Length: 147
Image 1 (spheres, helix red, strand yellow):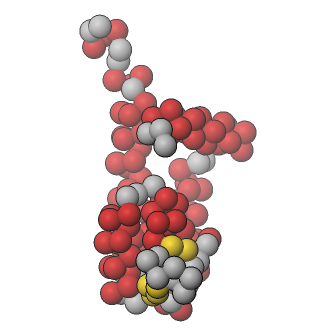
Image 2 (cartoon, helix red, strand yellow):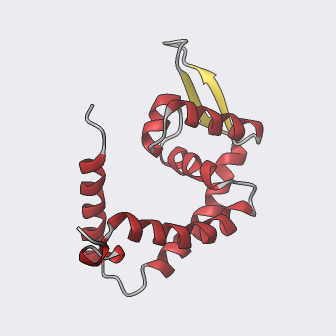
């Protein structure tokens, strides 16, 4: 196969990557002002939906490995955004809880990110968005390692 037979704009990875490279700086601008890095954002976002989860559970929620999650959680703990506590039932597990400071960022940051989504989704119908999200989930399932 030659490049002319498979143009770069047909590549899902290229299209997703290009969109990501444009979206990330906009996101960073909005969250960095609150002292939150891009990597930390996803942990806070997940905890706003479900607080008090284990390190393993939150790693799965955000799609990262446990060691990567642990590093981010330690940074959030150092910034007083979360507390890490041993599980009373299983001392090997660590549970992650938002602090008041971490909870308070939800009302500051979530509207900013919602606005970014509103701008990015201009001219896209709810049906188109639902199809897009369904297709992305299928792509992720297709390329995810088998358990």
